[in-house]
Image (tube, rainbow, N blue to C red; front, side, top):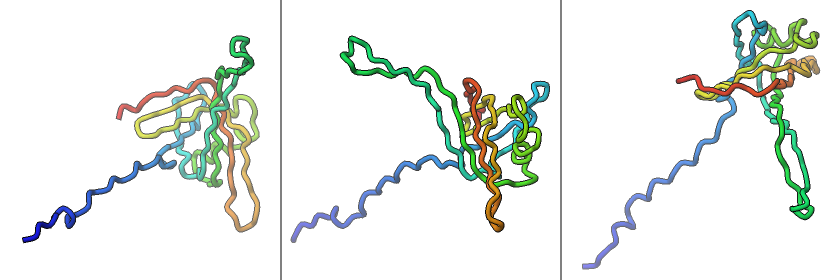
Length: 165
């Protein structure tokens, strides 16, 4: 009788699934539509108008060459300002859109452009005072959706915490 290796006929081992990357819509953005200090914040979701959000830390760098390093330079990060560029669609009736495009905010300067933003991902929460800049409803072709772009500049260090969930 001939010996056969039965292992050759068994099922192959179960392959591992790849790690799932983060999906952008998992981060929720909210804007405070009642920024006066006397009122408690009214957080309006930006999800209905947002199609893209990109972040930049805008780091301030100090680059120096010390004698001891014989001409080779060193870099220290000495400051930063968190900014977000948000693009999307103008949606009248949406609380966040109506706030951003209100005459008081869009055509206002100074305090009229200051409010707060909240980013939530899972149980992580980032809240910081912001200035709305470069508010630009796009207009364009007659049969296209009116685009919206706004740059959000962080004012100081954000507060980072968790929801407790």
